[in-house]
Image (cartoon, rainbow, N blue to C red):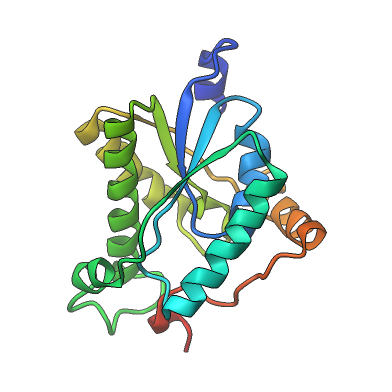
Length: 188
């Protein structure tokens, strides 16, 4: 990411940022809004039940109210797409192939939206979590960036105290911090 930021040379290109939730977006927006014109993309069909999805969206909107320089591109709740993407993987361990399918689903929708919307870059807040494999997420992002003709911004937002900072900012904003990634399989 440092190399990509240095290559901007003062330009502020448009970036579509997939966000999994408000708390994870806090420190990521703090970093990226200094370099890009950021639009947040809230596409999370994995979050169940729908009430949990809406609660997380409400907290995402609270983050954006504190960061008015970032925009929002919201998607409808679409649990059926997630169910189809992970069909047959329901019994997989947390962090396994079911998660890979979930990452791919959300990143592909983001890459497609970035391409259709004329964004130069896209990436995801997913890498701020110490429970998410940044290397796997970045590999999927690069692949989809090539397919859709949009630059993927590689990241590991948990580094350099990014995760710690997200906790601090979440407390400052009084955000709901969930205790599971969103799918019911991870709630057990």
